[in-house]
Image (cartoon, helix red, strand yellow):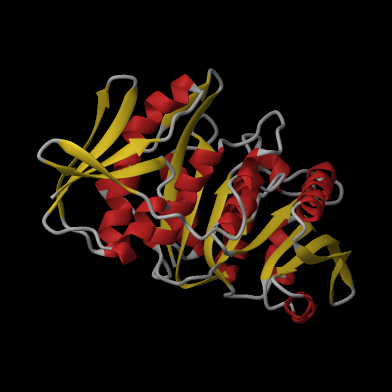
Length: 338
């Protein structure tokens, strides 16, 4: 059976050109996870639009169709019968609209489609891809793009970020979004304290369909530690995260505060971070990190991740995500499991 997916347009032309390559690998990982056997997959241009064509032995049923809609590049799905395109549209049940992640604009923001792609790589590599609700952790969450993408999917979102201004803007923006959307919610700000040690400040929000759900905190949760990511394992419950997704800062030294009297090297920061993050991920959970290859090589990151206890995935379909962002940034993705 032949299928066609219309690729979502993107105003960033250089990124869209790279995306046409990366989306084939993303789709391959998702299809493999959900057990769809395919014989061919490619992207072709028809008129002004681009389509992904997939050949499968069997039809894709409604249960599997929900996974197809999660693809970062997904716009519309068609069954192809005798060269005719038959649109199949199932309105996704989203907890939040897609505007949650794209309304907040700022310099250096990670592309929402790329963030969604990384989220898929982690989820569909983990053993938790079929769970309706999972815990997503971004250990370098910035202003929250990954967290918001997770919440759009209906998941719980957890993050750590050192920069005070970023967390402040994240909290202000999300609280305003909830008020404007008339979501029932509760926002809590405070301090993270462990054994009398102040780890930093916290922003938490609990969202529900009723006041009772908000009060009992049984709806959706977002929780952010404004502090050192190398200490995130002291604040968040160990083995509580199903997946970990992050875009490593291109100046990695910003991941952690300096020790008293001296600065820590990039290698030291990565070692400490990976060890802390490993404690938070459940067994069978997965990690997807993007980074600037001008800062670290893949082999260097692989060695550090595996020293921390992760197993890096080196299958061919995981090695096609490198792409140019700017003259100073060449980005790649590494995926690992626990």
